[in-house]
Length: 177
Ligand code: FES
Image 1 (cartoon, rainbow, N blue to C red):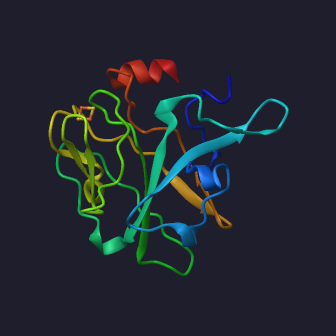
Image 2: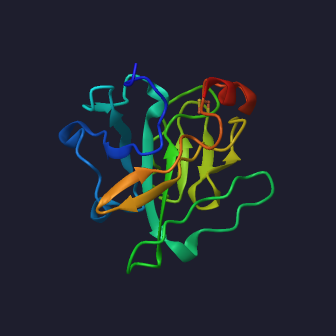
């Protein structure tokens, strides 16, 4: 069903927090602290569907000054920097919020906005280096979702570029797609 489908190209990112759930996320609302998001697409009748019946679809959106992104080291995957009209020093990245180790939800780390810390087994990811693993047991980087800005909305360009939690490897994920 569409509410369980993985993120799709053309989906809009909407708020996941209860107070604003379903509202499109605006550029002005983004910061280093991250905003929780769901992808929202359409069902076959053209109605909006928030894809929140699949826990793996929980996403987080972060905005940093572009210069702070580091080149991903070998083994990490490249981050995508979103060049905005008139705001060329800002970069926006969207990642899964579900740990690649055992599937725990991962909040942004309030003590260091550039890292994600998974409280289940102390997994750590670096948001400025393609969300690669920098500590603990996660086996792979947090999956990224490429986005673009259309008007004031964040629109997905693709689904997860690497396998999200629940898919043991890239081949399983590609078969699923
Ligand atoms: Fe995140 Fe184990 S589930 S480190």
